[in-house]
Image (tube, rainbow, N blue to C red):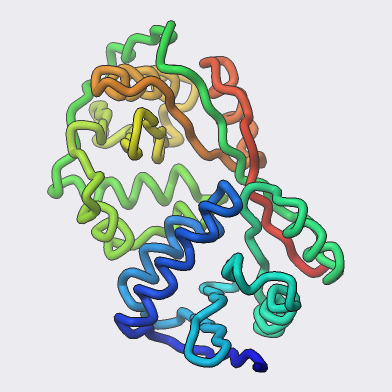
Length: 284
C-alpha cells in the first residue's frame, strides 16, 4: 500500500497520541529522541500559526511525522516502517519547503540520508555531561544576590534571555507563550530556577531541570552582557549543580551550541565532557 503525506497546521487528539507513541518507539529503537523539546511541546499543544506538520500514513496507521517551523525541520519514521524509502521521501518533502533539518544523536542512518540528499552540516548542538560529585566551588560575586524565579520575573527574564542569546534565535527568540509552556510542565521547579540580580536588575540566571531517574540538566544558563568577565556565569553554574546534587541526583547534562566557544570553554573548565551531538543540515 502506498504511503500518503498530509501537511497540517493543527493536529487532532488522535494524531497527537499516535505521534507521541511513535516517538517513544523511535527513542527506544535509536537510543535518542528524534525530536527536540521545542517540537514536542508544539505537538502536545496541537500546533499553531506558522507551523507545518506532515503526517505519513500507510492505510489508517501513522508511520511517520515531520515538523517545520521558521525554516527548520525535524522528522521521524516508525521503526516498523523503515527500509521502504519513507525517510528519503519525507526528507524530500521537507526540503521542498526550504527547511534545514536537525538530526539527533549523529546516527549513521541519518548521516547517510543527509549525504545522499546533498546536505552539509551547518550547526552542532552538543550534549555535555559530568557526575555530580567533586563539584567545583565558585562563590557568587559580591555585587550579586541570588533568589528563585517567580512569575513576576517573566518579562525581565525574557528580555535577558534575548540579550544573552542574541546570536542563537532558537533560544533567544522565546516568547511569553514559549516560557509559559515550560512553566506549566510537570518537571518545572521554581526553586531550581535561579536568578541573579545586581544594582541594575536581573543580571543572570541558571534554570535547572530534573529528568526521570538520577539525571539533572543545566537547562538554560545566561548572563547579561554587562556582567561578562565577572565570574557570574561560572558561579551560577556551580550553584545550580549544587542544587541538583541536593535533590539526590548523581549526574548532570547540558546542551551547548559549539559556536558558543566561551560557553564551551567554561563548561569544560567546570568538568563537563562531550557525550554526543545533534547536527543541523542544510542544502549548500
